[in-house]
Length: 42
Image (cartoon, rainbow, N blue to C red; front, top):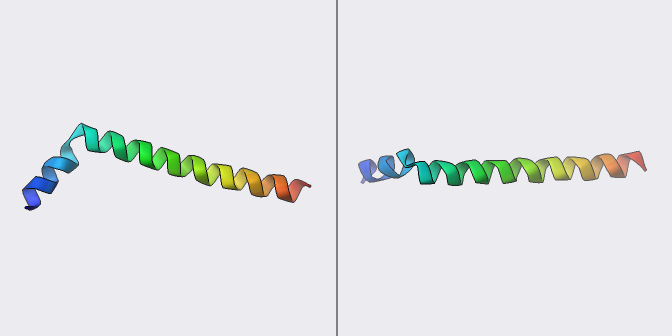
């Protein structure tokens, strides 16, 4: 069971999915910060 998960973790497909997930998360965070900055600047 554990080795099966290890194989998934090692697969490049899974890592690319993770990368996309984290990048979109970062973009959402940056977007929220930009919104707050705009609100503060008004």
